[in-house]
Image: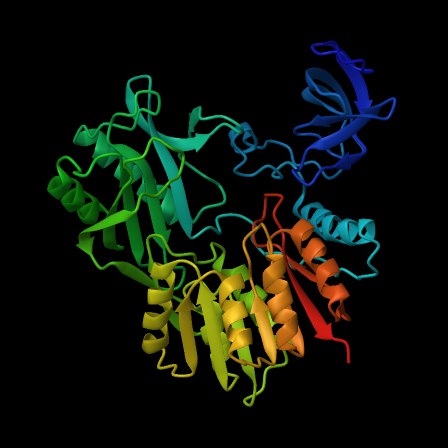
Length: 456
């Protein structure tokens, strides 16, 4: 059935770019019909070719820029935009920070919530910040390659400099790649579900320099594993741990269920806010250490913690923010669904000689209900949920506990605003400005710290 729209697929149009979407795509309109175009910025005039037409919107491809924005960065690497590694690299950094503030502000306004949003806290050097890499391994032109997928596909684009990663991590990926080539370890073939190496994971301690290599394999055995390990450790003396993760499935999940230690320790160590943390292959640990310290310090400061207070840290991971808060309060309770993370959290409490933190494995919403039924009365609840935000049952259990404050670290403004509306109905208001923090420069993602106060 033909869709009646003001634009036709494969036709070219001259358009004015008026806005950016939350995915960083430029927005143009013809007769109020939206066209979304990669690598365009507000204020630009562009010739575009329509690539896809839906009932209510379309997608276009940039052909030429007729008028450029003063916020445009020239000479960018097209591969970073094609793969989504750095979809905002063509936008000047101060404009990126403004875009992120505006994104949060606009969502509150659409929800008709009168909330101020402060300017985004940025980085002095907004690149080379990631302390973790997960890169796919595939065969291209008969050769084992590492890189990143083209957006919305599984076509690998070979990349050696990832731009937003710690350069030592980029270097390690190339060393591991070349070692695997040298010993003829077969890259994974998705179509035939054969081959060996699916992904290379590299983690590096920002303060310690300790490095972990993860080799995700389709097979239970890693061919030539002794020689592979010996050669990697000779060339990368920072490596303190090499872990094989076995992923036998034919799905898209990166990790399988079983880890095998091939060398060194099961974890590496790093420091955050003066504390030492053990980080294992699968555990969640924020990827931008300098910004994480700003983010967590801000959340702790806004929680107004004192030595007589009890705090719950939902989605506590390996205990990073729990243990940072434990130094200021009477007791911290942490919950996390990933069992390995809770084991790490308990190890981290011991490493830092912290005795007033208790960690349990469970779904946050179910554990909150149990704590509430058992009469736990927290003064503050700290939440740092995944992108899907808070489960409504979690919010209800939290509100029934009647804490003075709920401090919400969000990685998704849309779910933050949704949850803020529910919290407002349950008697929790935002009385101070929301603070965005740029954890992921050159990308569209933004973190925020929001404080909800109990209305007396």
